[in-house]
Length: 121
Ligand code: SF4
Ligand code: SF4
Image (cartoon, rainbow, N blue to C red; front, side):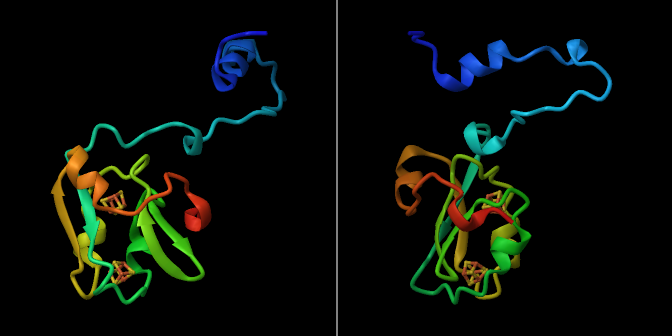
């Protein structure tokens, strides 16, 4: 049994793109859902859920589908993928999203299950 993580193992067994013949079909496409892509940001959004009206405008405008939603309510921010662009804070009609410096302390203030759940558009 290999000690490699499954994603690395399957990646190493996949052919290089140069080896794929015309008409070849990718049966195991990549997905940013499986990798952390938000680790270069400098700020994180902090949502004041007391003031949030769950209008979902931030969810619609987020370029990275980083808001977590359940039962038509905003429930958290997926910081594995958020890039810290600040669009959500700009578009929120009640201004209940504040962009703050990215730090372990600030990240912990936000509920997140780290999964995209219903956030995929
Ligand atoms: S800062 Fe940008 S990427 Fe992060 S949740 Fe807001 S809109 Fe999405
Ligand atoms: S835009 Fe603001 S009020 Fe609307 S769901 Fe997002 S955080 Fe809540």
